[in-house]
Length: 96
Image 1 (spheres, rainbow, N blue to C red):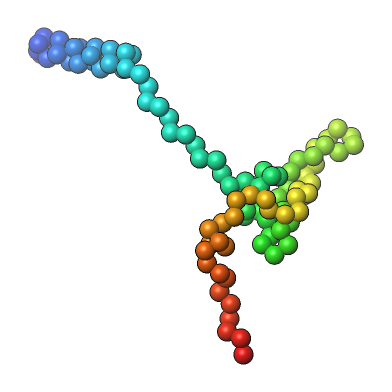
Image 2 (image 1 turned 120 degrees about the horizontal axis):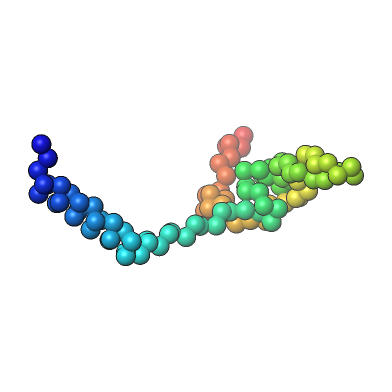
């Protein structure tokens, strides 16, 4: 029913694969690029473009030892400047 030569060849392939996996080193992981975060820990999407205030909410402890939602106290985005603001001026409607 089973060919002994095929079983030996299959076992040899499994053994070689196992040995290569054990003896070979792991591949180095690619380093994660740091995100564009403000000093408050939130990204540009959470900050208003006009006023610069942060609209994110964080957990804070209140006086009773409980945690509650509170708005972020950041007043201005201090992270990296987006490229579209550096290279492309905002499109304005034509003046009358």
